[in-house]
Image 1 (tube, helix red, strand yellow):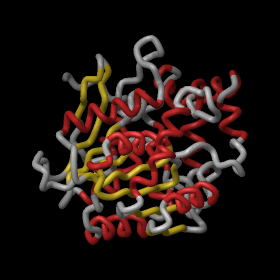
Image 2 (cartoon, helix red, strand yellow; image 1 turned 180 degrees about the vertical axis):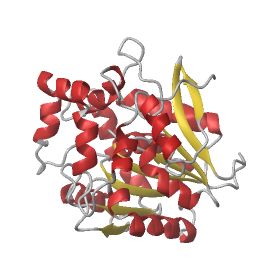
Image 3 (spheres, helix red, strand yellow; image 1 turned 120 degrees about the horizontal axis):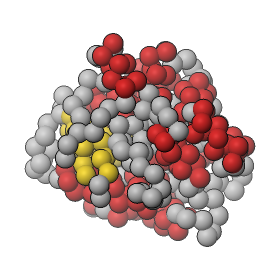
Length: 316
């Protein structure tokens, strides 16, 4: 499909910083909406080419995985989507797209089918990417060769965990004004998401550039509003189904890299993953937060690269 116009702030940023995001753009037509994605590295569509699929959350986009793609693309195919409403994808209103977990999973399924990526997949997930990516994985467990888990969830809020007040605020009318009117969610996340180090001005601009207007911030709000907290909430049944099927991946090589200073996905979420997957390889970086790939890039990226290089295929 024809490439949509890129956000002006983003175009200016990459023109001034050409090494920031040195990737070719691709788009998939999803019912009239443009789903942007990266497809880097070996492009063979045979079953012999290993593919790494990286699924982002909110309020990030494929920009979050930029350095991991650079590190892995020489020997692996890397597919990294921007969810509808995020990054360089279309940002439709509610009349043109339903911002739901079910649609997110269906979008990912359509993209991977379009790319011919149906086996030998290493799935890397962060934030909402855990719910989206693992929901897809539960549909296609035979396609998963490895899992890489980065500060995310794939089950309901742990019983001992209180829903963070900042997310609760974002679900109110005042919060909606702050998120869509002032870009508070995306902007604030670039400051509180890292604990070991501070993002540079260029990095912060990279994260926030796609969300440059009230209309273009719709998904950052809808993601928060769509968090399923209790039975009856939209998406809760999907989340419970994922949780009940996590045991199917116990024989799958799993790497977990975690920043416990995350205000949402903290040690309690990590403990839940370890209870489901006691044999997973776990690396916790005590001084790091939610944006673990930014906080501990020099450690986490080599860990992922080494994990991909040495782990065998998943047991049937």
